[in-house]
Image (cartoon, rainbow, N blue to C red; front, top):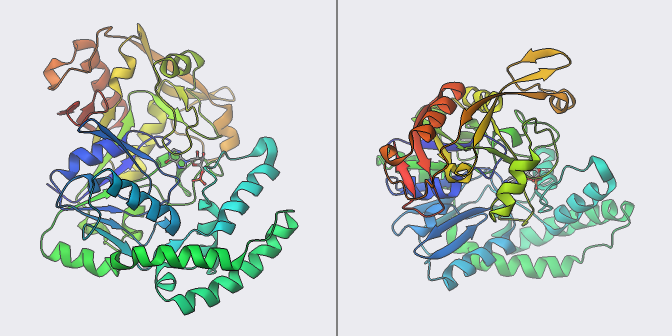
Length: 422
Ligand code: IMP
């Protein structure tokens, strides 16, 4: 098993949590390197459903070490809640969790500013998760953020927090939002700090020692390629680098130690939040929602759904350097007679085969489809590639051909057992 970076090849929610859970079986360390508790990974195991936001999915496997890297933004109170939730479900969170001392903190003013900015944008809103992610990364870039290492030093933390709250209360005041109480935040965060203290270390050094000891690392991506701050449908993106390079900057592991990139994509496309989505389709949306599928793990929002977009996933393969693909939710298409694949866009009368960088041009793109026959039988019991109906195998091969990477994994249901290693 190689050191693998697992990335979402679409707009997030590709089913990465389950694939990570499967791949964790053969790695020793699982690393989150970007995002925050805007992410939501759902894993069904042993009859239980676990929803993780900040803690890597490897936590469900005994003996694996989970690392929250320097590139992640952490809401300490939310993280403590997640740790306690797992413990109450019988999952030990002890020496198997490590948190970078360089990870930045999400503070209550980040959440309030996120929410208020969205309100002010009105119909132009981004559809954020309102977890304060954008403002927290904004502070990091502006060099006004607080880090885990600050939180570990109560006196230092309190002094910095006081100054930050003073400034942010002025910003909140201009938004007409009530000021934040320094004391309340200080108490809640310093309390969370004591629960987190045993986990906080220099994770860069830990990971380099692990590499020297030939341990295998799995980098667990959050969100997806088109939510990447640089390569996504800006401004309808999240505030971190969700593409493969983010795994290196967000963990301190150098690029040449990454041996493989796996891209996860659904057999169709979904997106939560606003922004362009050329292959969006109401019939598919209604069908999937009718099956009880495609509601967000973090906010519960109904996801927008559509046909598979090969233009987007081809670009994702290029920008991430995807070697192999994990195709999830194949069973979601079991009842569809004719399946469409978006193979190009029509933009202002021209045919284009790459997603336009400009979101306004992207929004004007009309999908060009090719069609394939559906298989019209349930696939959820397939355990080997050969168990899949011929039409489903042809569909998967077509997706790989158009996307430009080989097939690695097919997922036909939420359970660990419903996974086909190709
Ligand atoms: P933010 O990350 O909360 O700032 O939200 C920015 C955009 O990214 C919005 O469209 C969100 O819906 C989307 N987003 C953030 N996290 C996820 C995720 O884990 N899955 C899917 N979409 C996400």
